[in-house]
Length: 348
Image 1: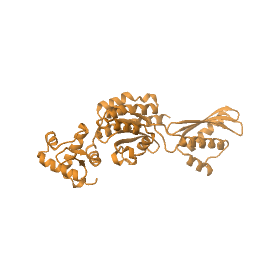
Image 2: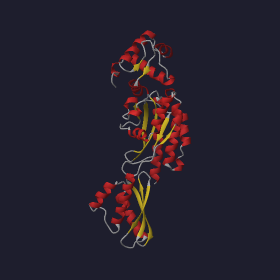
Image 3: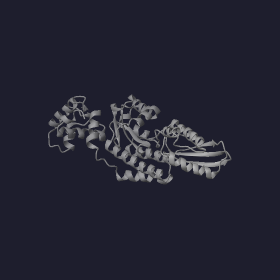
Image 4: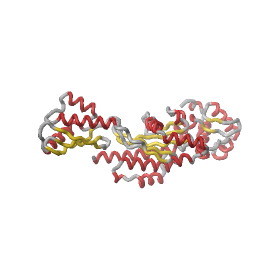
C-alpha cells in the first residue's frame, strides 16, 4: 500500500488506534486519548508529532494542529489490510444465521431475503443479498413428457436450479418410452453445456438421431430466454439502521443515503464492483467507481458454485464502518449460503 512501508511500527500502531477508536466513537481522536487508552509508553507530544506526520502523508485529517485526527480513505484501507485479517464472526451471529435461514425450505430466494435481514441487524447498516444466478445459463437436466401423438412437454432445469418449459411438436408420432430414451441420450450429451456449446456440438453432428432436431431447437430457445432474463432485484434490508448512524443525522445526508440505497443503478453497481479473487472484497469511499457511492464503503462476497452459479451478499455503510465485524459476517454468510446452494445442487 502507498506510503505504508515508510511508517515505523509506532506510527502504524497509532494509525490503527485512530481508525479503531474513530469507528467506535465517530469523534476525532486526540493524542491524549490515544496515550490514555493504549499502551504505547510514549508522551502525548510524541503522539502529536506522529499524528502530524500521518496527516502530512494523507492518512488522517485535522482541523488544526492540536485537534483530534479523523481517518481518511487511505487510513481505512490500511486498517482493512492490517487489522482485519483474523476477524471472526461472533458465536451469537453464527447462531442467528443458523436459526434464521432454514435449509429445509430449499428456496434460494428465502435464503437471500433472510441473509440480508440477518446481516443488516448484525452490522447496523444496509445489507443486500441476491439469489444465485449464472452469467451464462447451462443445462443441468431435461425431461420429455408425452402429451399427445405428436406433442411432448420439454422441461429444462438449469444449473442454477431454474426451470423452464416448452411444448415440442414432432413431425411423427412418439411414445413415452421413445421420449425417455431420447431424454437420457440428450442428458448425457448436454449436461453442463451452454447454448453456444450445444449449438457447436449440434452443428458438428455430435448430437443426432430421430426427433433430436425438434428438441435441440427448443432447448436452445429456452436457454436463450434464461440468458436474457432480467436478474431479480436484490433484497435489501437495514435502511433504518443506516440512518441511525451519526453520519446521517442531518436531513440532507439522510436524503442522500435513502436515494443511494433505493436506486437500482447504485445497487447494480455495488453488485458488480467485486473484481478480485479475494473471498471478501472491501471497496472504501473513493475506491467506488460509481460517484454516488463514494461517501460509503462496501463489503461484498459472492456465494454459490464457483464458476457456475453465484449470488452476492454485501453491506453498505459509512466509511466509518466496523470493517472487522462486517468482513467476518459477510464471509461467514457467503460460506453458509454456498453450503446450502451446493447441497441443493447435489440433490437436483
